[in-house]
Length: 110
Image 1: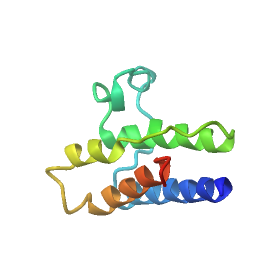
Image 2: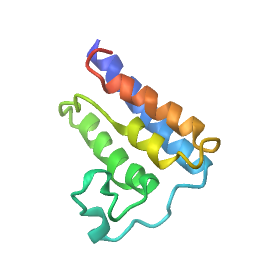
Image 3: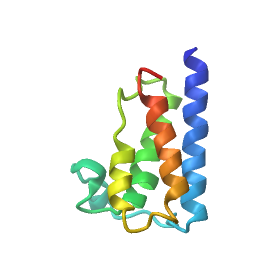
Image 4: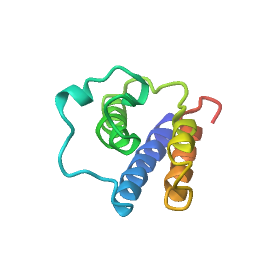
């Protein structure tokens, strides 16, 4: 049922947000408008991956859910996270687990 999937995704977004806060990776102040305007995937040229999650990914996904817009068909976030956190496997374990679950929820085969 579509509604349940939306609720599950919304829950997952909250868990991701919580984990960013738990790890101290949540910023009080937004990056510059220029940094946020990056068109590079994951804004790697201007934001850290954690900033991208907080300021671009989470707000964008919330908008999609709130306005009933079509969900992205695939999410490659975990792949990116694995790369970014290669040097921090312990502290990023829970976040990577949450992102993996998100990727699964988004995947149409779910």
